[in-house]
Image 1: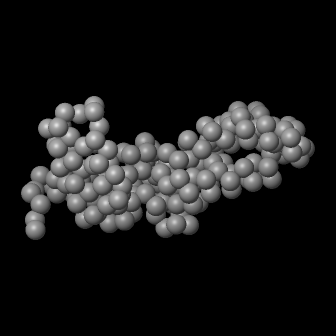
Image 2 (image 1 turned 90 degrees about the horizontal axis):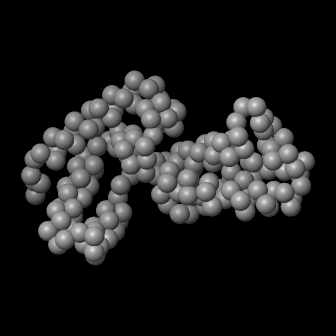
Image 3 (image 1 turned 60 degrees about the vertical axis):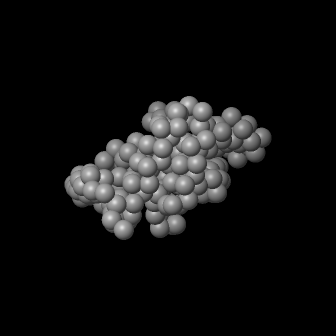
Length: 180
């Protein structure tokens, strides 16, 4: 890190080669979309190059510092693309197909998973955008309430309320049969 702070391109290349696979996996988990994850990783390494002199080893390990930069860039990209984590029909259809073709499930299990995915997608569509995004961040990406509040730039109480009310709406929707 010290050599990168001194603008040593070879050291920066080594840093990139050693850390980029792990950081890419991390950012892909947040953003889901491969192109967005690549964009976030590229912007992150530009930021790492430009800010390496500001790194303080007494505050965090190098990987922790870089992970924080990557995480923040991912959130910037989410804001820029105006909410990326919606569950859309394409994602659900891919999951259904994978479940049906999976040898890990018996045919009845695959059918039950497929029906559940369709019902969940239908109910998710009934939630408001930020409410849906809050739930996805919490349950699909394991974000804490405070992380979600920071990501959406909202008070933590608002995020907790949205998640609680959204889960209640999902529960009610899933308990009702689909209406044509």
